Length: 148
Image (cartoon, rainbow, N blue to C red; front, side):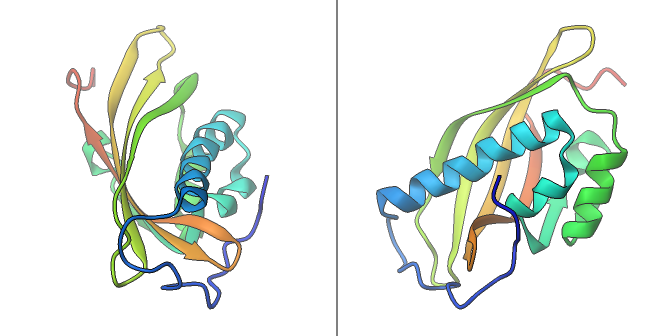
């Protein structure tokens, strides 16, 4: 997996508007990589998913907001995770003048009792010197209420 999340001169190099296919595929790859990294508990590989200045808002699942790659990594590493993460239904928006791209995707996670919890990720991705990275992620719950 690709490592590193240094932001290079590429920020803003994506013109505002609809993204070219290679950018759309790069974004989808990052979202899929997240599920693989978390399922493998390969926490160091999160640098290939989140930018150094990422924000991850897990308030919807009662975990709070985490600022910076190190804080995101520490939080994810400390959690008890579902058995499997699945990302699907990716909708890539248009690049803004700030170089950020809004992306929505749906997720399913399989819990230990084999039930499924679902929701939505609202992301903003940035093109860095080493590829696309999530700059901000907000978890949204869309299914049944949490069991706790």
